[in-house]
Length: 154
Image 1 (tube, rainbow, N blue to C red):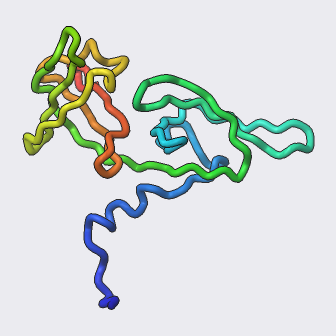
Image 2: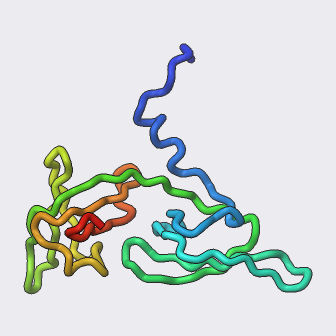
């Protein structure tokens, strides 16, 4: 029965996390979900030829691999927009090597350990040293994006 109370914090905090965004209002920097992957929009351009329906070219980075690709979407397409939460972590150590896949062990503010393969850091693997700051962008428990902060805090 409804008692006029606000819902529990966990569900109230995430209800906005999966709103569908119309392709016409997508902009650079937005994080969306497309074909089961998390993507970050790099470029968005409307195209129209003659009397045909308007379409949109979207260039995006696949956040799990770092690969930049593009797709064409028709007007009216809606993609789930993701509003990730940020968690700052610190690199504790790197493990593995040789035939074993290398992994990075991170610790968050509460000293919870998070293990991730080095492949998730695609372009930033040279910055992975003990003590380096890493920002994890999460959608509930799924890691959406990984950013390594340089020594100067950038």
